[in-house]
Image (cartoon, rainbow, N blue to C red):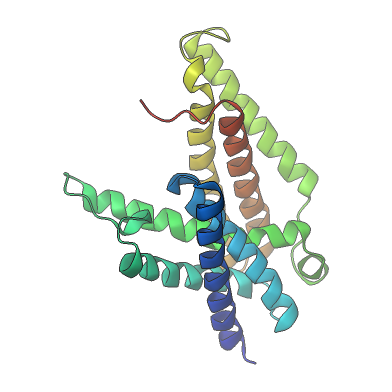
Length: 225
């Protein structure tokens, strides 16, 4: 099978896995879309990417390409089947088109970033492709979250002050923005051939996003008032 066919096969497999996970988690846990969609996009890309590496003998960075193509397929599906879910819904307020474009870009980053779990944890990818240090990536992500927490504490006052109820939300938002930037940079670096640095940045994006979500979860998952 040629590289282009492996990418298309991987994209179809990732899209299928993502849809299955989407419905399963939605029915089992009734998660909000702000959590449900990114989690399923990332998990589907990671599992599908690993499968295409083993079943079809794909080579890195073909799973990254497959993740991006699968995101396009999934967004088209959401547009047709679930027009109110994800970035396919267009509001009627000023600047709605700009916000939708940003949302589409964010989902392409999320859909492509899921496969960066493979260089960190998949033995096949680490043997033949990039193998970033998971310890250093995790440590960098922890230091970033600690820095954001320190800044929030300095701004809102001592722990337990008026800013505490939304303390976790602030870290979640900051972590999400940082995760999108670093994961997006990882995708760009990978596309231009800097596979090692791309895998490092992509992995950092996943860790920062996961830690930000964990803090938000542990602090009650408060949302904007």
